[in-house]
Amino acid sequence: MTHILLLWLINALAVYASASLLGGISVKCFWTALVVALVLGLVNAIVKPVLVFFSIPFIIVTLGLFLLVINALMLMLVDAFVPGFSVDGFGWAVLGSLVISLVSWMLSSIFNI
Image (cartoon, rainbow, N blue to C red; front, side):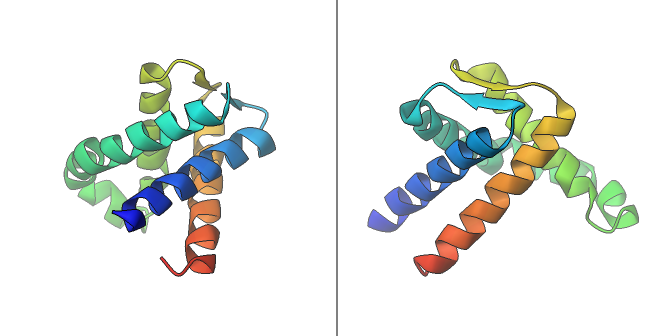
């Protein structure tokens, strides 16, 4: 249980960091970042596997780069559901998903998760 809560907090920090670093992503407050992390986790668990399955040919042809497109779409989907969180466009969503992934990876490495 503690492991899941720590991952949720790390993802919320990553969302908050992306909003702080990128001008095209905004988060109202840290509580909103917690909600975004929760919804993003649910979307990544439910919707993303379906999209990945149906886009396997694109993923293979692009050598995995199409996964960036899918991650950006997941971030834009969360934008549609969470008030107080906004992504200004697809390019910002791509950059935001990269920042979120990198920050999450770094913090998970630091905390050995």
